[in-house]
Length: 319
Image (cartoon, rainbow, N blue to C red; front, side, top):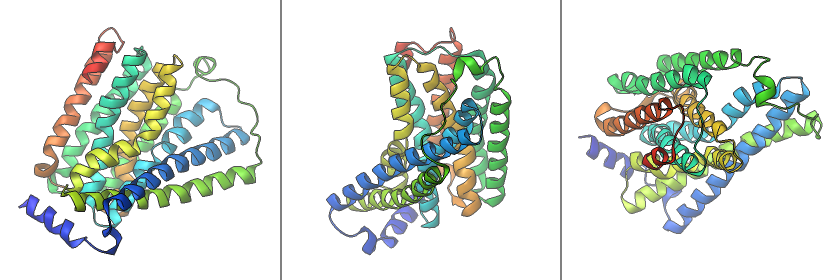
Protein backbone atom coordinates (compact mmCIF):
# COMPACT_ATOMS: atom_id res chain seq x y z
CA UNK A 1 0.00 0.00 0.00
CA UNK A 2 1.07 3.67 0.05
CA UNK A 3 3.20 3.22 3.19
CA UNK A 4 5.00 0.24 1.63
CA UNK A 5 5.59 2.16 -1.59
CA UNK A 6 6.95 5.09 0.40
CA UNK A 7 9.35 2.83 2.32
CA UNK A 8 10.42 1.19 -0.94
CA UNK A 9 11.14 4.56 -2.51
CA UNK A 10 13.15 5.63 0.55
CA UNK A 11 15.21 2.43 0.36
CA UNK A 12 15.62 2.86 -3.38
CA UNK A 13 16.94 6.42 -2.99
CA UNK A 14 19.58 5.28 -0.52
CA UNK A 15 22.92 6.02 -2.09
CA UNK A 16 26.20 7.84 -1.79
CA UNK A 17 24.50 11.25 -1.46
CA UNK A 18 22.71 10.16 1.70
CA UNK A 19 25.31 7.89 3.31
CA UNK A 20 27.23 9.15 6.32
CA UNK A 21 26.52 10.16 9.91
CA UNK A 22 23.47 12.14 10.96
CA UNK A 23 25.74 15.06 11.88
CA UNK A 24 26.72 15.37 8.21
CA UNK A 25 23.06 15.61 7.16
CA UNK A 26 22.45 18.16 9.91
CA UNK A 27 25.36 20.17 8.51
CA UNK A 28 23.80 19.99 5.03
CA UNK A 29 20.52 21.12 6.55
CA UNK A 30 22.14 24.09 8.32
CA UNK A 31 24.21 25.15 5.30
CA UNK A 32 21.20 24.73 3.02
CA UNK A 33 19.03 26.82 5.33
CA UNK A 34 21.66 29.57 5.41
CA UNK A 35 21.89 29.45 1.61
CA UNK A 36 18.13 29.74 1.27
CA UNK A 37 17.98 32.70 3.65
CA UNK A 38 20.92 34.71 2.30
CA UNK A 39 20.13 33.81 -1.30
CA UNK A 40 16.61 35.19 -0.90
CA UNK A 41 17.97 38.31 0.84
CA UNK A 42 20.45 39.03 -1.95
CA UNK A 43 17.91 38.31 -4.66
CA UNK A 44 15.35 40.67 -3.14
CA UNK A 45 18.00 43.36 -2.52
CA UNK A 46 19.24 43.25 -6.09
CA UNK A 47 15.82 43.00 -7.71
CA UNK A 48 14.24 45.77 -5.63
CA UNK A 49 17.28 48.00 -6.24
CA UNK A 50 17.00 47.48 -9.98
CA UNK A 51 13.28 48.21 -9.82
CA UNK A 52 13.89 51.51 -8.00
CA UNK A 53 16.61 52.42 -10.49
CA UNK A 54 14.11 51.91 -13.30
CA UNK A 55 11.48 54.07 -11.60
CA UNK A 56 9.10 51.39 -10.31
CA UNK A 57 7.22 52.47 -7.15
CA UNK A 58 8.40 50.95 -3.83
CA UNK A 59 4.89 49.72 -2.99
CA UNK A 60 4.62 47.93 -6.32
CA UNK A 61 8.04 46.38 -5.66
CA UNK A 62 6.83 45.15 -2.28
CA UNK A 63 3.76 43.52 -3.80
CA UNK A 64 5.68 41.80 -6.57
CA UNK A 65 9.48 41.52 -6.29
CA UNK A 66 9.67 41.10 -2.51
CA UNK A 67 6.61 38.81 -2.34
CA UNK A 68 8.00 36.55 -5.05
CA UNK A 69 11.52 36.78 -3.64
CA UNK A 70 10.60 35.54 -0.17
CA UNK A 71 8.86 32.57 -1.83
CA UNK A 72 12.08 31.52 -3.58
CA UNK A 73 13.27 29.12 -0.83
CA UNK A 74 10.05 27.09 -1.09
CA UNK A 75 10.29 27.18 -4.89
CA UNK A 76 13.88 25.97 -5.02
CA UNK A 77 13.30 23.18 -2.49
CA UNK A 78 10.15 21.98 -4.26
CA UNK A 79 11.80 22.08 -7.69
CA UNK A 80 14.86 20.14 -6.54
CA UNK A 81 12.69 17.62 -4.71
CA UNK A 82 10.37 17.11 -7.71
CA UNK A 83 13.24 16.59 -10.16
CA UNK A 84 14.82 14.06 -7.77
CA UNK A 85 11.56 12.09 -7.67
CA UNK A 86 10.64 13.17 -4.13
CA UNK A 87 7.12 14.46 -4.78
CA UNK A 88 6.09 13.82 -1.16
CA UNK A 89 8.80 16.23 -0.01
CA UNK A 90 7.77 18.89 -2.55
CA UNK A 91 4.09 18.67 -1.66
CA UNK A 92 4.77 18.45 2.08
CA UNK A 93 6.93 21.56 1.81
CA UNK A 94 4.03 23.62 0.42
CA UNK A 95 1.37 22.30 2.81
CA UNK A 96 3.70 22.46 5.82
CA UNK A 97 4.82 26.01 4.97
CA UNK A 98 1.20 27.17 4.84
CA UNK A 99 0.52 25.54 8.21
CA UNK A 100 3.66 27.12 9.69
CA UNK A 101 2.74 30.53 8.28
CA UNK A 102 -0.71 30.55 9.89
CA UNK A 103 -0.01 28.57 13.04
CA UNK A 104 3.52 29.66 13.93
CA UNK A 105 4.22 33.01 12.27
CA UNK A 106 0.77 34.61 12.51
CA UNK A 107 0.28 33.18 16.00
CA UNK A 108 3.55 34.64 17.34
CA UNK A 109 2.85 37.95 15.61
CA UNK A 110 -0.58 38.27 17.27
CA UNK A 111 0.88 37.43 20.69
CA UNK A 112 3.59 40.11 20.32
CA UNK A 113 1.38 42.81 18.80
CA UNK A 114 -2.29 42.04 17.92
CA UNK A 115 -2.70 43.24 14.32
CA UNK A 116 -5.62 45.12 12.85
CA UNK A 117 -7.02 43.70 9.61
CA UNK A 118 -7.66 46.21 6.84
CA UNK A 119 -10.82 46.07 4.76
CA UNK A 120 -8.95 45.80 1.46
CA UNK A 121 -7.05 42.77 2.73
CA UNK A 122 -10.32 41.09 3.72
CA UNK A 123 -11.75 41.70 0.25
CA UNK A 124 -8.71 40.50 -1.71
CA UNK A 125 -6.34 38.23 0.20
CA UNK A 126 -8.78 36.27 2.38
CA UNK A 127 -10.90 34.94 -0.54
CA UNK A 128 -7.71 34.13 -2.46
CA UNK A 129 -6.28 32.22 0.52
CA UNK A 130 -9.44 30.15 0.87
CA UNK A 131 -9.64 29.42 -2.86
CA UNK A 132 -5.99 28.37 -3.04
CA UNK A 133 -6.43 26.04 -0.04
CA UNK A 134 -9.55 24.50 -1.62
CA UNK A 135 -7.72 24.01 -4.94
CA UNK A 136 -5.21 21.50 -3.53
CA UNK A 137 -7.59 18.56 -2.89
CA UNK A 138 -9.25 19.18 -6.26
CA UNK A 139 -5.89 19.05 -8.05
CA UNK A 140 -4.90 15.83 -6.25
CA UNK A 141 -8.13 13.94 -6.97
CA UNK A 142 -6.40 12.02 -9.81
CA UNK A 143 -3.17 11.45 -7.87
CA UNK A 144 -0.94 13.93 -9.73
CA UNK A 145 -0.60 17.67 -10.27
CA UNK A 146 0.32 17.69 -13.95
CA UNK A 147 1.70 20.33 -16.27
CA UNK A 148 -1.76 21.57 -17.28
CA UNK A 149 -2.62 21.99 -13.59
CA UNK A 150 0.66 23.85 -13.12
CA UNK A 151 -0.15 26.22 -15.99
CA UNK A 152 -3.58 26.96 -14.48
CA UNK A 153 -2.01 27.66 -11.09
CA UNK A 154 0.48 30.07 -12.68
CA UNK A 155 -2.40 31.88 -14.39
CA UNK A 156 -3.97 32.20 -10.94
CA UNK A 157 -0.72 33.66 -9.56
CA UNK A 158 -0.63 36.19 -12.41
CA UNK A 159 -4.28 37.09 -11.79
CA UNK A 160 -3.70 37.64 -8.07
CA UNK A 161 -0.60 39.77 -8.77
CA UNK A 162 -2.62 41.93 -11.17
CA UNK A 163 -5.40 42.36 -8.60
CA UNK A 164 -2.87 43.31 -5.92
CA UNK A 165 -1.15 45.85 -8.16
CA UNK A 166 -4.45 47.42 -9.18
CA UNK A 167 -5.16 47.95 -5.48
CA UNK A 168 -2.14 50.28 -5.25
CA UNK A 169 -3.76 53.70 -5.52
CA UNK A 170 -2.25 57.15 -4.96
CA UNK A 171 -4.37 57.40 -1.80
CA UNK A 172 -2.69 54.32 -0.35
CA UNK A 173 0.84 55.14 -1.44
CA UNK A 174 1.74 57.78 1.19
CA UNK A 175 0.44 55.58 4.00
CA UNK A 176 2.27 52.38 3.04
CA UNK A 177 5.44 53.57 1.40
CA UNK A 178 8.02 56.28 1.50
CA UNK A 179 9.98 57.83 -1.29
CA UNK A 180 12.98 55.56 -1.62
CA UNK A 181 16.45 57.02 -2.11
CA UNK A 182 18.34 56.08 -5.25
CA UNK A 183 20.21 52.80 -4.92
CA UNK A 184 23.77 53.16 -3.66
CA UNK A 185 25.13 50.42 -5.89
CA UNK A 186 25.28 50.62 -9.66
CA UNK A 187 22.99 48.53 -11.82
CA UNK A 188 25.81 46.10 -12.58
CA UNK A 189 26.36 45.43 -8.87
CA UNK A 190 22.62 45.02 -8.33
CA UNK A 191 22.47 42.55 -11.20
CA UNK A 192 25.32 40.70 -9.49
CA UNK A 193 23.21 40.41 -6.33
CA UNK A 194 20.39 38.89 -8.42
CA UNK A 195 22.67 36.33 -10.12
CA UNK A 196 24.55 35.37 -6.95
CA UNK A 197 21.30 35.22 -4.97
CA UNK A 198 19.75 32.81 -7.46
CA UNK A 199 22.88 30.64 -7.47
CA UNK A 200 23.02 30.52 -3.67
CA UNK A 201 19.31 29.72 -3.54
CA UNK A 202 19.72 26.81 -5.93
CA UNK A 203 22.73 25.43 -4.06
CA UNK A 204 21.01 25.94 -0.72
CA UNK A 205 17.91 24.15 -1.96
CA UNK A 206 20.00 21.17 -3.07
CA UNK A 207 21.84 20.94 0.28
CA UNK A 208 18.61 21.39 2.24
CA UNK A 209 16.82 18.59 0.38
CA UNK A 210 19.82 16.24 0.67
CA UNK A 211 20.10 16.91 4.40
CA UNK A 212 16.38 16.46 5.01
CA UNK A 213 16.16 13.20 3.04
CA UNK A 214 19.35 11.93 4.67
CA UNK A 215 17.86 12.48 8.13
CA UNK A 216 14.63 10.79 7.02
CA UNK A 217 16.55 7.73 5.89
CA UNK A 218 18.58 7.55 9.08
CA UNK A 219 15.78 7.92 11.62
CA UNK A 220 13.04 6.17 9.66
CA UNK A 221 10.87 9.23 8.94
CA UNK A 222 8.94 9.48 5.70
CA UNK A 223 9.69 12.20 3.15
CA UNK A 224 6.15 13.54 3.72
CA UNK A 225 6.75 14.10 7.45
CA UNK A 226 10.15 15.72 6.86
CA UNK A 227 8.61 18.02 4.27
CA UNK A 228 5.77 18.97 6.63
CA UNK A 229 8.11 19.80 9.52
CA UNK A 230 11.85 20.41 9.08
CA UNK A 231 11.76 21.59 5.46
CA UNK A 232 8.54 23.61 5.84
CA UNK A 233 9.79 25.57 8.85
CA UNK A 234 13.25 26.01 7.33
CA UNK A 235 11.91 27.51 4.11
CA UNK A 236 9.59 29.77 6.12
CA UNK A 237 12.53 31.48 7.85
CA UNK A 238 12.40 34.62 5.63
CA UNK A 239 8.68 35.11 6.35
CA UNK A 240 9.24 34.41 10.06
CA UNK A 241 12.08 36.93 10.33
CA UNK A 242 10.17 39.62 8.41
CA UNK A 243 6.99 39.13 10.46
CA UNK A 244 8.79 39.18 13.81
CA UNK A 245 10.65 42.38 12.94
CA UNK A 246 7.40 43.99 11.74
CA UNK A 247 5.55 42.99 14.93
CA UNK A 248 8.34 44.19 17.24
CA UNK A 249 8.40 47.55 15.44
CA UNK A 250 4.64 48.00 15.75
CA UNK A 251 3.80 47.15 12.12
CA UNK A 252 2.07 43.83 12.71
CA UNK A 253 -0.43 44.55 9.91
CA UNK A 254 2.45 44.06 7.47
CA UNK A 255 3.01 40.59 8.94
CA UNK A 256 -0.62 39.64 8.21
CA UNK A 257 -0.22 40.60 4.55
CA UNK A 258 3.11 38.77 4.43
CA UNK A 259 1.57 35.53 5.75
CA UNK A 260 -1.52 35.60 3.54
CA UNK A 261 0.46 36.54 0.43
CA UNK A 262 2.99 33.79 1.11
CA UNK A 263 0.25 31.15 1.49
CA UNK A 264 -1.33 32.22 -1.80
CA UNK A 265 1.97 32.15 -3.69
CA UNK A 266 2.97 28.81 -2.13
CA UNK A 267 0.04 27.11 -3.86
CA UNK A 268 -0.30 29.16 -7.04
CA UNK A 269 3.33 30.00 -7.80
CA UNK A 270 5.42 27.30 -6.11
CA UNK A 271 3.26 24.33 -7.05
CA UNK A 272 2.50 25.92 -10.41
CA UNK A 273 6.14 26.26 -11.44
CA UNK A 274 7.09 22.89 -9.92
CA UNK A 275 4.27 20.99 -11.65
CA UNK A 276 4.97 22.74 -14.95
CA UNK A 277 8.63 21.68 -14.75
CA UNK A 278 7.95 18.19 -13.36
CA UNK A 279 4.56 16.65 -12.43
CA UNK A 280 4.05 16.28 -8.67
CA UNK A 281 2.57 12.97 -7.51
CA UNK A 282 0.38 12.70 -4.42
CA UNK A 283 -2.77 10.92 -3.32
CA UNK A 284 -5.60 12.33 -1.25
CA UNK A 285 -5.35 9.23 0.92
CA UNK A 286 -1.72 10.01 1.70
CA UNK A 287 -2.01 13.74 2.37
CA UNK A 288 -5.69 13.99 3.30
CA UNK A 289 -5.03 14.58 7.02
CA UNK A 290 -2.46 17.29 6.21
CA UNK A 291 -4.88 19.07 3.88
CA UNK A 292 -7.68 18.87 6.46
CA UNK A 293 -5.42 20.41 9.10
CA UNK A 294 -4.37 23.18 6.71
CA UNK A 295 -8.03 23.82 5.85
CA UNK A 296 -9.03 24.01 9.52
CA UNK A 297 -6.23 26.49 10.25
CA UNK A 298 -7.28 28.55 7.23
CA UNK A 299 -10.89 28.71 8.43
CA UNK A 300 -9.80 29.60 11.99
CA UNK A 301 -7.57 32.36 10.63
CA UNK A 302 -10.40 33.80 8.55
CA UNK A 303 -12.76 33.70 11.53
CA UNK A 304 -10.18 35.41 13.76
CA UNK A 305 -9.70 38.18 11.20
CA UNK A 306 -13.42 38.76 10.81
CA UNK A 307 -14.09 39.13 14.56
CA UNK A 308 -13.59 42.83 15.31
CA UNK A 309 -11.18 42.92 12.34
CA UNK A 310 -8.34 42.19 14.76
CA UNK A 311 -6.41 39.06 15.72
CA UNK A 312 -6.29 39.09 19.50
CA UNK A 313 -3.58 37.53 21.66
CA UNK A 314 -5.63 34.51 22.77
CA UNK A 315 -6.52 33.85 19.10
CA UNK A 316 -2.81 34.00 18.25
CA UNK A 317 -2.09 31.53 21.06
CA UNK A 318 -4.80 29.26 19.63
CA UNK A 319 -3.22 29.38 16.19
